[in-house]
Length: 114
Length: 113
Image (cartoon, rainbow over all chains, first blue to last red):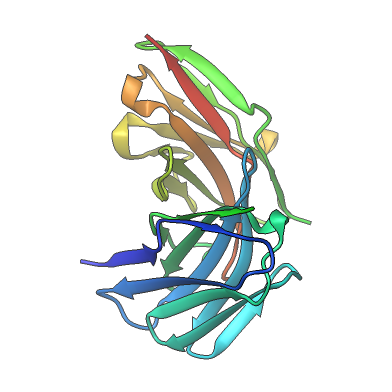
């Protein structure tokens, strides 16, 4: 069966510090991978998605970046965190077109920027 | 542009009572519609989805949703809620030939004992 892992589970970082969140998927190959952010009291905001190694699409301009160095690994990074980067970050995977296929979500990372 | 509206930010329901969560969408073509649930501090889980065919869709945990094209709605229902249903519920619509979903802002369900 497929599983998706995210770490760390929680993170407290000072403003201006770098960020690296990791997501890995097991039990499937060539998944589509997604990074979402969920701010307090708000819905899901798609940040990045990837349909293959090295292929990254960005949905929202910001100081975050994403990389996919391996088929089942998706990394969210920042060189300098802002207060507004605080939130709950969710990684998800899916197969084929999102319009017709379920997305499977990881447990999330709670990021607090102070 | 496609959009999804969940007009209720919070809903409070007594345990054992019926539930209906509203979802309205704006989409030019036949939509692909989803309901996901998020327990506190957790990821999201798919409850049900509609692509075509029967407009009443059955999902997991006793939930169902009805697609009404004339009202551009896809409301989620459950005849009798349990305390474990307390969570946030998200409606989403799929975009044709696309890898993304358009998400509603979510409805937080609170269960009164």
